[in-house]
Image (cartoon, rainbow, N blue to C red; front, side, top):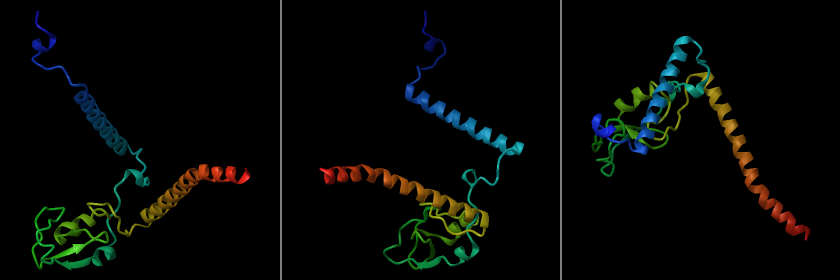
Length: 165
């Protein structure tokens, strides 16, 4: 009698491969469920954790540094289109120092406010989003302070123990 796998002309599944396939299916289900939430109107559009950031502020985009490609920089590639920069070509430099062709970075910043490589954010013209960023930064600072206290607490106790003896 032929094995199940021979009968169905297939191979036994590798556990790692099965896990990856299940993870992909779960991701697809989650994405589709999210789309259903948005269609049904139960998606809270004020929750920035689940939305793309708004475009970069026009003033931030207009004030990006224009760089003329030097002989040393010639041959580097634009991270968006992957074409090499040519000597004496003008490109845009983000505050994070990443270089891009204007035709590549300007449309990008018209859709979102961050560097495509490192995600450094430029200011936006959206007051709600700017307020969200401030609140998020304050929360991150609070977590950082608490973690610092936790890591310092054992050494402070050890110091106190030695001082008491």
